Each structure stands twice: as C-alpha cells, then as structure tokens.
Length: 331
Image (cartoon, rainbow, N blue to C red):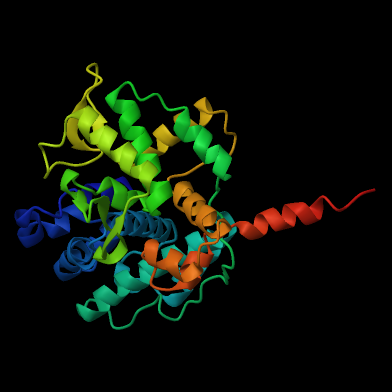
C-alpha cells in the first residue's frame, strides 16, 4: 500500500509520467510492460478528479495488488474474474457491504481504463457481482434539536478558534452543507444579497449551490469573519487552521480530519455521548427542518440533492416513532 501512496505523490511530475513510469509502479503492474505502467499512473492522474475518490480507490487497488502478490498472480494482465471474486468475497467477510461494493467499483474502473488503453483484452471485474445492499434509512448519527443547541451554545466565542468552530457547525446544521463543501469555501462565498447574508457552496460533482442564511447562521458567520479579521482576504479559505503556539488563524484550509477531531472535542465538552461525525450535522439539520413542518422537496432543494429520495436517508423522524412504540412494551 505504501508503494501506491508514493505513486500518487508523483503523478504530477511529467518526468515520471513520460519516462520513469515502470520504475515507480508496483511490480504487478510493471510486469505487464511500460504501457501498463503509464496507463496505471494515468488512471489516478487523469480519470479520477475527486481527491476522496482517488484516496479510496488507491487504498482498494493497493490491497488488491498486495493480495494478488500473495496468491502467485505475477502480472496485472493475468488477473481473472475468479481472482477478483475471491478477493471481493474476502472483503465481504471482513468489511461492511458498502465497503466491498466500493472496492469492487474501484477495480472495475481501473480495469476498464486498462482495457480501453489496450493493456488488457477484457475486464476481469466486469462479471463479478458484489454483495447485495439495500439502503432505506441512513446510519449517520444525528442529534436532537436541544442537543445541537446545547453543543453550539457551549462553544466559547472569545477566541478565533471558538468563533470558527461555532460558524462551521452552524453552517452544516442550518444550510445542510456537506463538510467538504463547507471546508472548500472562500471568504467571498459569504456574501450579501437582498439585504440578507448568503452562502455559496460547491457540492459533489462540482454543483454550485447558493442559499440564504438562517438568522442564527448569519450571526455566527458575521461574528467569525469580523472577529477573525479575514474580511479583507476574500480569496482566502473561510475555515482555517490555527497556528501552532500562536492560537491565531493561518491561511491554510482546515482539513476534514481536523474538523472531525474538533467535533469530537466539542461534543465531549457538551456532554454529548452520541458518536458524531462530520455528516451528523447535515442529517440533524434536515431532520429538524422536516419535524417543524418542512417539505421534503424543499429539503432536497436546500441540500442540493438531485432527488428527494436521497434526502429521505437523512430523515430520522421515524426513529422517534419507533422509540415511542418500544416504550409501549410493558411487562
């Protein structure tokens, strides 16, 4: 796996792509020749633009290549459907069905790329079926409205760190923003229109999305931008890291891993035992909106979902109903 990571670190170097591809790719790929090595690098460099997808696919590819090496498969062109099926069966036993399906999708795309590049004649992953997985309800942990309010209110706002954290959590709750879209915002993506503060988000697939701010979110963002002194840097990242030892904002965008750790700290400080993730606040906001009489179609529009069916996965009102019904069991 480490070799794959090193490969990804070199894909923006033309001299590697042009002349040294065979020397940096895994042995299983290099054994198929220079064209296979070049095509393998191009798959991660050109075929996948989303960094999260690239990271997930590289991990799946690295593990499959390692498995092939342990099972006497000497070249990528020697991979057969039975090899892919055996590996996916192992993934199904060791991981959840969505993980196994994602890893199968990674192999299918990689082998498709090699087939269209005339490295292989057929796609050995194309005929392999993944595990069945039907999603009717999301699994992202959500907060009750009073818990979300308690978490936000317990954040100290006397420092740039506190102002930043409150603004970020508030943005995800009140605008249904994904964490990736929130952390990708620039200062200029918070703007005034029709005498109201708006936010501009770039969601999955590069879909631009703008919506007006809830009055609480407007207060959080205004206090953060003014208190952190970043209003004069419109092209800079909105949410930034904190300088080590200075407790002041830098110009480096806040990574998702840092945001996840921050949420864990804030939840613990508020006495919340639910294990939250970055996506929990999106689900919390959508559920709270629907509980207060919101319409599913409008929620889908606000969340920038292509279909209300996707928004239904974030609707957890049925969980409260189930809990009420369970309490009817009296023995």
